[in-house]
Image (tube, rainbow, N blue to C red; front, side, top):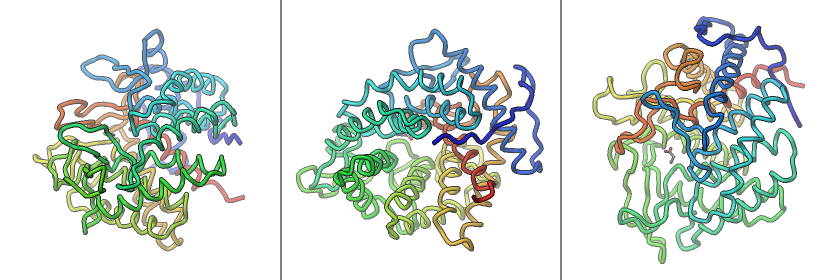
Length: 398
Ligand code: GLY
């Protein structure tokens, strides 16, 4: 069940040492150096979190911001620790991951949020994958049951947020990410109902969230009684008709994941359409790390969103495994370019800086004036995942 992909660590990196890896270094060396850096940097982050009430989310104005388990990002820190355990095989990372996974169990009965997939699958899901711990399985199944209560058959979707801002039944593109908890729950329990809901949600979202060019709208609000669309708007994007970068990345990752989980050609086609939009976008910078919105005012000086770049990068590595070899190379080459950018000094922090997070330059919610050009825990999580996915693609096939 366990696979240890980073068996030999270089001599321990000391705090204050500036990481150096040439952009031209062989890919295997580049990945190894980035994973070694991650172990050193997260050792520092663990020290910063010690004694604090909460889980690390970001670092702003010289201060580490921690959040309670009910925050939508609560699972990512534990998930990153699980990836470091996977990379190193060292029990100390497993124990750290277990420690920061445990508090998240408290959200498993929460029926007030659609984010249970994010919270539980990144923490308990990774823990189950790497340890087989039956308790994690129970927590995940309970969470899947709670998430299912938010499905409305008239709409054909899981409700994202409770009614707010005049919305009655808002569904955001991000919600695609919560479906993996449901497809997993059907696989493990044998009960098809979770997977059926995930498929209904994904089908409705293809119909109502996407534009002809492959981009997506952030929020679609439905009438919960009839399923009629009430509004198509944004919450975190630049405008209702703009392409908010992280939303596009969630869509790409979500449909790639659904293509893997269900093998339905429509989901693969949707993922490829989103990839086409993103990879060929005239306002995607040369380093392939998007501005926070593809239609942001102020481009080319608008803030970037490294988290969107990391999510997109990880998704493209997976998409490359689902298409014929002649198409895979394009996705993989593009993702490697993104990975090399994210792992370069332009985005990767110096050791001991950035509050202990790996990546700089993410943007959480620019219209809400929060988390602009900062580190964020989910950028690190998907960066680590992308490194491991890229590494897996280099391994000789058994
Ligand atoms: N709702 C998740 C995000 O901000 O991307």
